[in-house]
Length: 261
Image 1: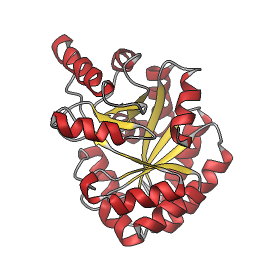
Image 2 (image 1 turned 120 degrees about the vertical axis):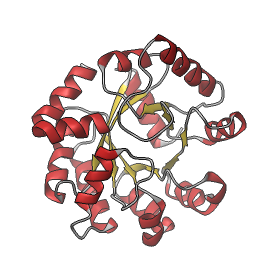
Image 3 (image 1 turned 90 degrees about the horizontal axis):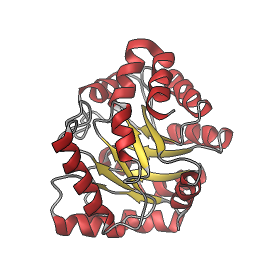
């Protein structure tokens, strides 16, 4: 197994489901975003998915889009981001950082260089939602050389053959989008919709040997509990950002404790 998958397997022996929290690098400022990441690690989250902002984050809902646009009012660069995340990774060895962004800024930085620098900074996974796997051979090779995992996404509307292909190629973990649409408000509460999510995850598990993370629309403890035994990681994005916007770090920490403890 990869370093990322090994970390997940070891952590899962201690917990029924792991927590992944999403933070936009540079929002509302670089210093404040790093302080928030540090606080999350101090609180014991298993993963932080750090989003390097892009002007057109097509998979994201309004909360994360607004945060990205605010962050981009500053001059940000990928190299500085990687170095700062590397410092956090060294200071908090019980957590792991996964870097998420869109293809444009990462392509400009250089995908080979990205994989190499991420590995040097102990960032074990990379998520590029708008990079099709069919066009990612060079990127995949660079990740393999550097020993880090490209994380692929599947959705409820991914065609079965393609879902099987993506699940089969997943290594660190497979990012299972819980519903169609962008990040934010949940659309899978209720018995009928939950049954549909259960069937969807069961279908993925038939094809994936890698761990499974579930995100998009998670806001309530019951949703986290319903994932136990069906997934390995629950990913908290827009709900955490909304709490942070309303009440700062304390409100965000309270949400995490309410959902995961």
